[in-house]
Length: 137
Image 1 (tube, rainbow, N blue to C red):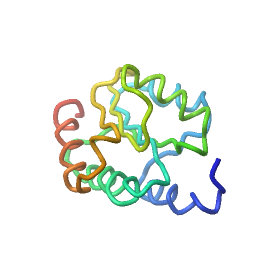
Image 2: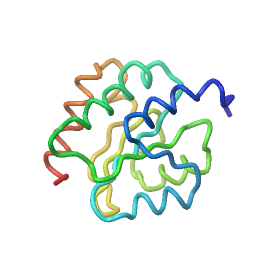
Image 3: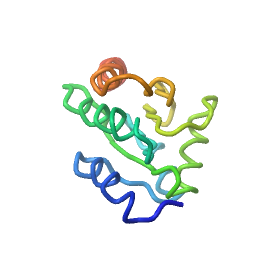
Image 4: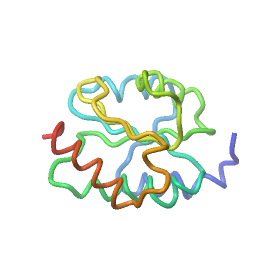
């Protein structure tokens, strides 16, 4: 578990961009099962989360088509919520950061850590926008 004061600015970056924090198993279950599209960003303290994953996820939301719901869990902080989110991401192995798009409760697009590391925030945003254009209204 990371100290709250360490992760506070990392949480706030997504919250300020309109992402809903999910802290409990129940909140994750309810969010993913909602009608429409739900983006789940598994946030992390690592450099690729700060440098590209969070900025890319935020930039992707400026697209005409975007998820109905923007959500986030924090790996290493909200352990149970993160584990529940990862259950919905099977068959992909746990990784953080990662970004998943669900449509009507079904996983339709996944960016694992290895898709994020070494890529620019713009490349991540473009990848997500492609998924939004296909799956979002």
